[in-house]
Amino acid sequence: MSLTGKHIVLGVTGGIAAYKAAYVARELLARGAEVRVAMTHTATKLIGPLTFTGLTGKPPVVDLWDPSYPGEVHVDLARWADAIVIAPTTANVIARLAHGLAEDPVSATVLCFDGPVLVAPAMHHRMWQHAATRANVATNEARGLAFVGPVFGKLASGEEGVGRMSEPLAIVDALEGLLAKRSSARDLEGRRVLVSAGPTHEALDPVRFLGNRSSGRMGWAIAERARDRGATVTIVAGPVSLVDPGGVEVVRVRSALEMEAAITSRREDADAIVMAAAVADFRPRALATEKIKKSEGEDAPSIELVRNPDILAGLGQWRLGRARARPFLVGFAVETTDLVAAAQKKLAKKKVDLVVANHASVAFEGDDNEAVLVREASVTPTGRLSKRALADRILDVLRDGTAREDPGAPKS
Ligand code: CTP
Image 1: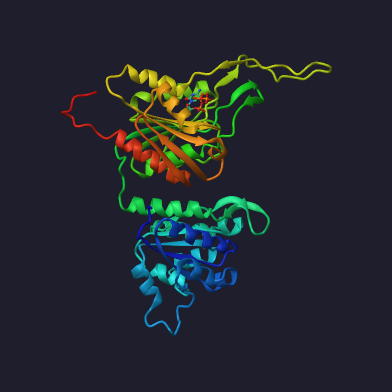
Image 2: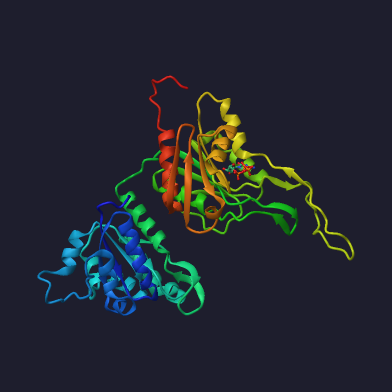
């Protein structure tokens, strides 16, 4: 458990998303952390302090001036904490943090604390966009506070926009990432990692294509974590609606053939290639130059397909002719039955080092995943975990597989 023994103060402030703070607390505990909760007065109107007492075993701090407390509660909390996460964080509290106000247990504790602070904002999208909030966020970031979200979605007002709090799992992942970064876990420093992500679109005519449901999020998670761990990262992405991660080169392609060309031209430079893309196995034989029209009384047209190249198998084949078993190759397998057997078959057939096998029911969309890591000599089920956590498990294998060789050692 990655947060084992860590002391985490969970600050809860007065947004409707406060009810989700209970899930954040539960997730922190599930990953081995000790949790103490501090709440603003408004937060206590939105979720009962007793909920947190039940979850964490300790009553939350709701009053800076509790006469029964012998010392200064915010000072003690800040001394105890390894990290503070505030979820949800209102525009008001972001403003307090920016201005050093300390009128509630959450902002007073932050003001006493010099370790990592993670802020998960939740508010109406116009409040988030307001120049005052923008300036306050910039001030907080410049002072080293980290932000996760807000994300696009339905807001309490019924409107949609960027203002919704990140999901609890994503918040705890971000906290883990923050702590890992601070403990300078840059164990992929110097490695060059090439990641493919998303679906491919195989065009039928100027307006239609054959595609699949891949969101690209698994590839994104691998790329972001590899970057956080010090690697130089390139993503070759099919059509996905994800924002380019900072500090990562992103090459956008559409079809399997374009993806193959983009990967082939970069394969020499890579220490590892992770094929997380859901590459279409087939494409229409012909691409109509004009939009295909239906005409009265005519049967539906049939589409003739041809095979696309298997990019991963091509990489495996190419590597056979190299002096060293580089780059390290990782493939994915999405299956509906016989997960492990199918992955082992793919590992051997495509001549790769690791196949990450998952069940079709959990592979697409969503933030969670559950996989089996299949290598030539081992089969490791991961259990249910977030895509980021799975990314870390894959990168652990990749790190060990790309460990720098002793320059004096004979090359394999
Ligand atoms: N892959 C690829 N090129 C393709 C198809 C797949 O590089 N044309 C890669 C994927 O990125 C993935 C792995 O191969 O890492 C496994 O893909 P999968 O979807 O299981 O498809 P197939 O290998 O084609 O197997 P199946 O017959 O089960 O569809």
